[in-house]
Length: 266
Image 1 (cartoon, rainbow, N blue to C red):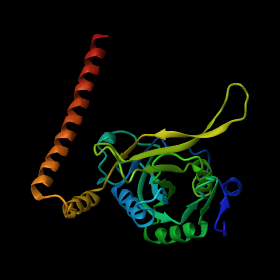
Image 2 (cartoon, rainbow, N blue to C red; image 1 turned 30 degrees about the horizontal axis):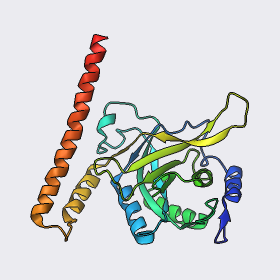
Image 3 (cartoon, helix red, strand yellow; image 1 turned 90 degrees about the vertical axis):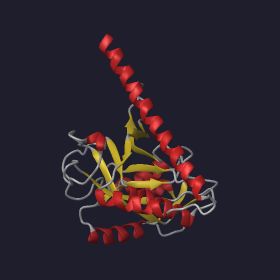
C-alpha cells in the first residue's frame, strides 16, 4: 500500500497486477457484469462526500462501492420494474458505499494518491455490519471519465476481478435523466496484431430501491425545502417537473407503439 502523499499510477497498477485478481474462494472464470443497479443510499453518500470535500472546486471525489451480484427475487422487497420475471445474471446490485481519501495532481493526472490502508480498514468494519456485501467497484464524481481512471481501476482489481466504475453526477443539468453512468474495463483485441489495450465499456444502469429505502427517500424529499422560493412557486415548479416527466413517459410509449406498428407491417 502506498504511504507517500503522491504515488505514480504506474507503480500502483504494477502492484494491482501482482495482487490476486479475485477474492479468495473464487473458482473458474468470472464473467464481467452486464448491468448495474444503484441504490439511493449510494447517491446520497456520494453527494454528501462531494459537498464536504470538493464543493465549489474543480476537484472530484472517489469512493468504494459495496454490493453483490445477485438474482432479483432473493430479496422480494427489491423494486426493479424492468427485471420482473427475468433472469438477472450478471447484474451488480450496488447497495452501499464509503468515501475514500484521494488526491491527484492537477498538472499530471497519472500521479495520484489512494489510501489502501483506509480502504481495507473501512471495508473490514462494514463487513462486520453486513457480511454479505463485498467490494464491487468504485465511484467518481467525474463528471466524465478521466485519463487516469484506467490506472485507478487496475488498483481496484486487487479487491474484485471486474470492478465497476460508477460516475455520479452530483450537479446534473438534466433533472429528468439518471445521474449515473456505469463502466467496466475490457481488453480490446486488434485484428492487425498490434498489442491489446484496455478501455471502458458502458454498462446499462438504473436506480433501484428496497421498500424501506423508498420510504426513507420520500420522507427526506418532503423535508428538503428551498428557503429562497415561495410556497406557490415551489408548487408550480413541482407540477412543472411532474408534467415534464409525464411527457417523457408518453413520448416513450408513442415511440414504442410506432416501433410495434412498423414491426407488424414488415
